[in-house]
Length: 151
Length: 147
Image (cartoon, rainbow over all chains, first blue to last red; front, side, top):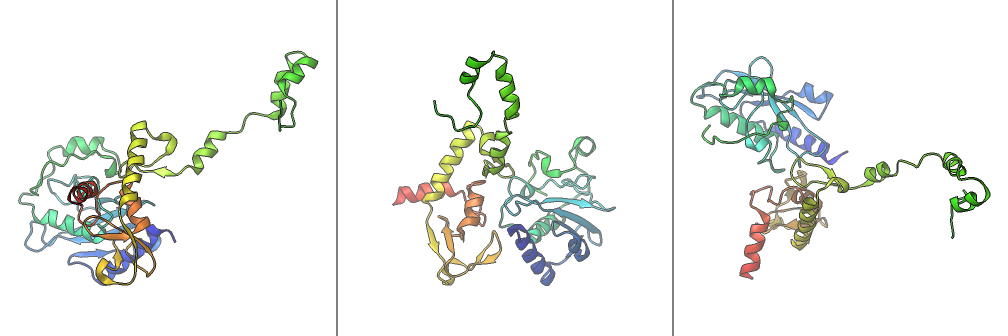
């Protein structure tokens, strides 16, 4: 088994055994293909997203965990957030420049929950319309410019 | 002149027949094999930056120098063999596998340790500790200065 698959199985085991609050992996999606995960995310209590349900897709390349996974929101509820584009792409530095192989599906999910929770006003990024029209399907191909550390 | 190919050399043929014979020899031998492609398939892949993969022939001179320097720096980082003591931690956070007694480890200046193969692969892409994100070369320089 490739080392990448070994690690993914370990992560899956840990995430299934002790899932963080509001995060659960869609086992059915993984049983078909270990390199593509569907993760259900609940908006945190006390946040603007309380009661909302979201889906994230994780795609792993053969060089995971040295290369970051491709992560985006999918489904009919894309959170309205200043760092989330309406096509599901997320502007979050740990998904590209600040990725480290010590990060995991769990830590990425927690970062996204925390990013949503610290939001004070539900709105799309200011460049949403132009970005969604011109971007690549793969959010990792975007050269993100991380300018806002507040949300 | 020695020639280990079975075909006659061009020199011999041109003496016996007209200069048109050169073409027929080339035809008999067929087109040259796609040599370069074969070489590229076997070449190791380098990662001058995270999310960038290139074979040696695709690297710019600047990247080649960077990689050579990086290899040198990595080789100066201390290594050890896991002896079962929990002092060094017991899991490699890169592969998420437990250290087994006798496995080679590499210890970074911040004292985080990993399987040697796991961390060397990462350090070629980014010279930072995966656990604390501390730049390894900065820490190395301080070690040199203080010792």
